[in-house]
Image (cartoon, rainbow, N blue to C red; front, top):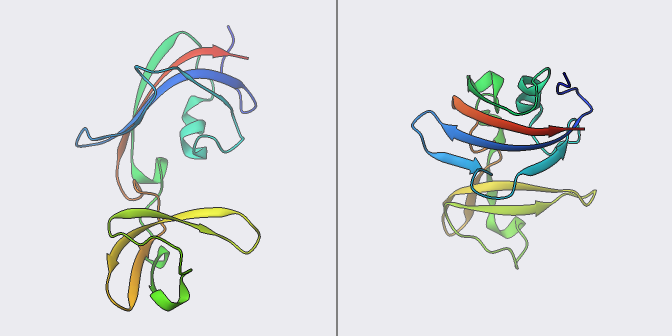
Length: 142
């Protein structure tokens, strides 16, 4: 029987929900996802629970924050002067803002608060510090 390895290509459906049932992401009801394990398409902690699983079955995992997206890190919450942000950056409270790093890479921050002089960004994953449910149906393994 073929099982998921750390370098497998997978076709699967998956759903991530918070403990209160709020759905964060789901491919059920749409086309399944295709991904390569270890490529960063799925969080490393979520990939780790897939190792050894067979195809054609459905699994549900209850994951604590440490097993999912980690604990919320207060050092990843930063107050930034509006004058230090690009003038063309659209700032809207309770929205995700994309930044470009000096090396050309991109990362996102959640804009929690905005006033006349500063913006408060949270660069943690939105589910950091929260237990989640990870549901997966592995369709195929290559």
